Image (tube, rainbow, N blue to C red; front, top):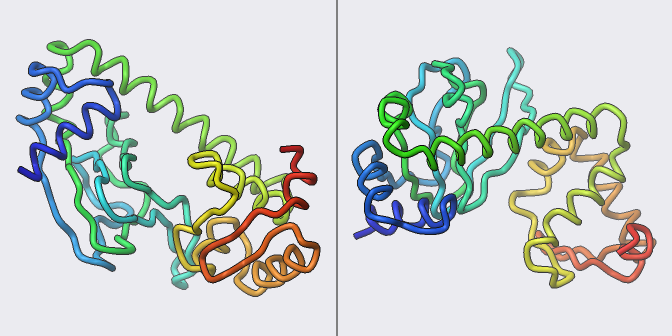
Length: 222
């Protein structure tokens, strides 16, 4: 039952429907998995064969140097898929992936997928579109890290989180130390930034919950 639900969610998320022919195609090339918190899904450089679709939980994608210093690439939320670089005929994972909480995932075999794309041209078009969006995302991230200061990066990150629900209150998807890595700064610098923005009445921080105050909307033009 969970596997059927997973396939249906994937199809509805990316195709807007779960038509029998699409369901049959994905059903034949996918595996449903449950993984525990803090499990490593794959490591950078490992040979890979599956695109991962996340149904429940959260996943961290990151890279690490020889000294063990991490650079967070992004946090994967339910309804997103990752390791899509394999769709570009790459055979190895470009990053590490670790679960931040208990997760359920649908793994789609890339090699089998390419063997069946001719049967579902709509699938091919959606995959091309998704890869294009991911490329744009990564280019914007490189630009932000290169030319935008930490304050503006964080303000932009809060805007992106608020776009989903527009309640004026956002929940950080990971501990503050992880968010600092995602933004390309140190935990100490990030803590000082939170304190400064709180003193300026731009935000109000309570654990992982951040309320966007009137000062936030004035500064961002919302």
